[in-house]
Image (tube, rainbow, N blue to C red; front, side):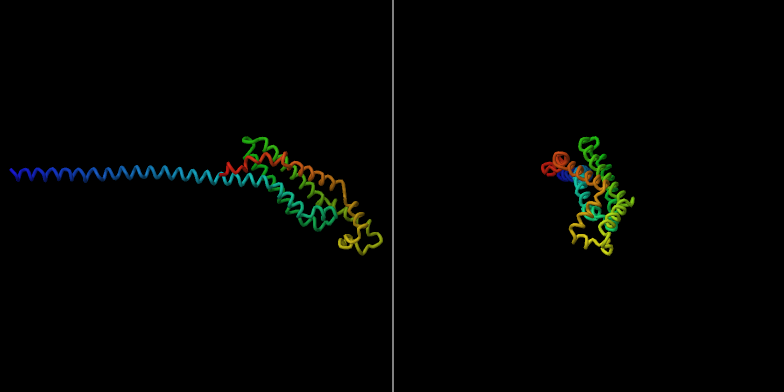
Amino acid sequence: MENIVNELIKLNQRDWFDIGTVVIPIILSVLIVIQNIHFARRSAILQKEIHNREWAQQYHENILLLYNTYYEFTDVIVSSGFSNNVRCGNVNAATGWLNNLQTLKTNILRRRDLAKLLFERKNPELYNIIKMCFEGESTIIDKYITYIVSGKLLEISEDAWNTVCQIMTTYKYNYTWLSQNKKEYDKFMRLCHSEELIDIEHAIEKDNELHNYENFDKYFEEYFSVDKLA
């Protein structure tokens, strides 16, 4: 009798062992599947957060690029020697900046199109302001380039030099001598101040007015809020 009981116990233990060998792998597989699903969801959330963060960074970089275009424009106008080379009729120095001016115009028009993508629907008021400023600056550059390549600057410069150097012809094109003789310098500057130059100067002044706080900066404030970037 005792032997029969022992055999039954062994048989029962074997059944549980067999069941365990079948059930445990299934349980482990289910746990692995659940773990993989959880990991995939966390990975998707993380990828989305990274994407959103990168998109937000690129978005604000584009807005900063649009905002800084005015300063890039004024920097190129100053660096080109507009106040000196053009007003003084220095044709060679002014001509040397034609490529830079054309590149600037191309960049401005591209950024106008970028502003259209970003703001035409989302913030049409800001888009219209940017469009007006960028197209105005593009027009200024066109007038600047035309004034040089049309030969008008050369013509005015030649007439001015011929007038101030009627007696002392050896000083023609000598800007060092001109700068050291105030009377002749003032006379030369007046002769070089053409209608075309006055038109460009007025256009630059108007552009500067369009970029004051009330007309320009205040519309960008919401995009540079520290709270929104945090």
